[in-house]
Amino acid sequence: MAGAIASAMLFAFPAFAQDSRLSLADRVTRLEQQAQNKDQSGTGMVNQMQQLQSQVQQLQGQIEELQHQLQTLEDKNKAQYTDLDARMGRLEGGGTGAAAATGGNPQAQAAGNPAAAGSAAAAASNTASQPVTAGSSAAAGDPAAAQAAYDVAFKAIRAGNYVEASREFRSFIQQYPNHALAPNAWYWLGESYYATTNYPVALESFQQLLSQFPQSDKAPDALLKVGYSQLELKQTAAAKATLTKVTTKYPGSKVASLAQERLQRLQLQSGN
Image (tube, rainbow, N blue to C red; front, top):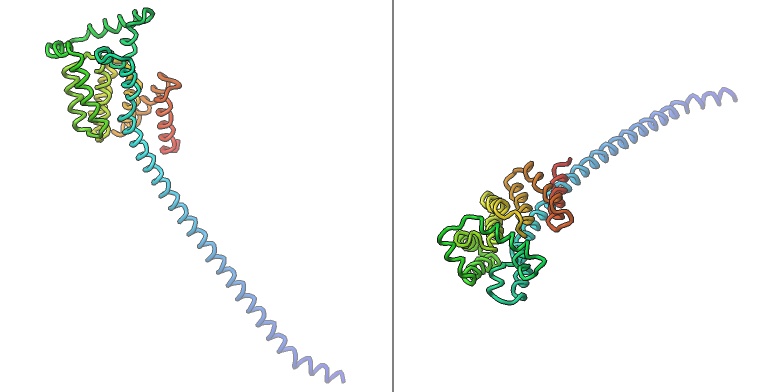
């Protein structure tokens, strides 16, 4: 009996050993397949991450382009509408002659106010001290003609006719270099060149305004646009200095807010 059992076990052992070897091979195969699947999954995740990074970079580029286009539109809108309040104020003040003479200049408008008489006299003294050509002296005697010439130029820039506007504003400045509207003419001359991407001449125009009329109501806007023009000309260091000057010289103003916004954008772009 014991011999029969032993014989049966001898015959069964090879089959059991074979089943064990086959099971081990299957397990190894399954492990290899799982490892391969994990490798493929890891590679897929890496590819997906790379694709996502590429998409993010493309989106960032599109955002920067849209921001640039938006800023350009804002600049153009500002060129068309910034002066409307001042012009309406001149019209509501009554008297074409008075409006043309003051040109929206608060110092000149204050001439009728005894408390502001000193400031008005000082402004008149500064204007008289500047050189005046013979042609401009004769033309300055006709305030209506000066206002009409300015209106033609301003109408052109409002309509988006920047080439005509630049020509008309230059003509106005040549004829009326010391007129109360001369600072405005220099500013809009710069805007007409800025809108047509002629940044070197735009920069020169804004700097001329700041040099000749540093106390003008247009000086803050001109200083801001000096910074913008320097940026367009890739004068980044100078532009940052100019925009920083805007924020410190005119704190709490709209131009200071715009300058700070542009400085922040530059900081984000540089990654510093």
